[in-house]
Length: 385
Image 1: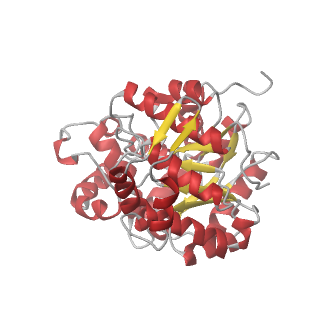
Image 2 (image 1 turned 135 degrees about the vertical axis):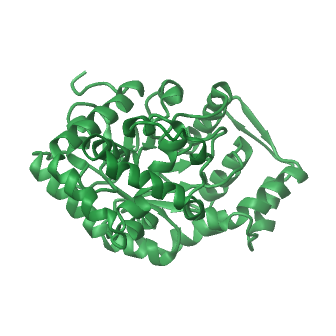
Image 3 (image 1 turned 60 degrees about the vertical axis):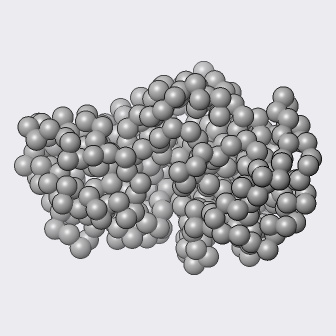
């Protein structure tokens, strides 16, 4: 059932923090023409929820049997940082490895001088993009990314399943406040390509804000311009772009489809948890408000693990439970509340699953309807069309 990502076309990382959302995802995957990655979790998410990669895999397999799903699917070890995390994920049977390079940014490496010599004073042509690297530009790029390049090379050389292309290899450089420009993207890809390293997808940091569970914040024309440049570079080297924190970014979906000509990977993990909170808000409003109060109490702790632009304390105090999920500040905050709601060390977990299990079929429909909206606005065609 679990396969590598396709080299071309549309793939969606769906993910399931709860462990009960996959039937809803399957309902959409059966109807629309994309490659689904049902199993997608990061070590951070697993640590908070008390699950393992094996649990994630098993939950998807059970859902596939229940929903009579016999088609393809991916298994993404998401945002892996350390060698130990990567090995655990590989041993668990992942078919996609997403390498999080954030901890290697601003770390200079031994290869810095070599990269500098390869690019200084030269002009590279990528379609209509003429890329010229001045001394100042190179020094700035390499001060941030030389450690990232070295890290990618080390992973390629130290993990045979990556080098042998047994898993799809995604490089993530989106966990930074600095948007990735076209010269940085090209330099990184060109150097890796010349070293014989081939990646399958790359997630740059686009301009604007890709916050959790809410729409895109920023200048859409600026995003489109950046996307065009990144797509040209990705196409030049033969891999696809990956858009992270892609859930609920409805304002930019038409441009993603248009610019990439239906050739991208997009991650929506986390939004199925918000649909679970919607069920809680409907069926147990007092419990939902208790969760919200704890969100306010734990805001500082949330900031240790997630970059949040929201101000939950500005949310009106007289909202009805369902209205919290429509308020951008509240919705973004609630998106990461899983860290204590699903955590085995808190007393929320049992009550949460008692409600969700009781109304499981309604939950699956909520998940399916929300993901279907994503799929429709991305312009993904129905199967057979």
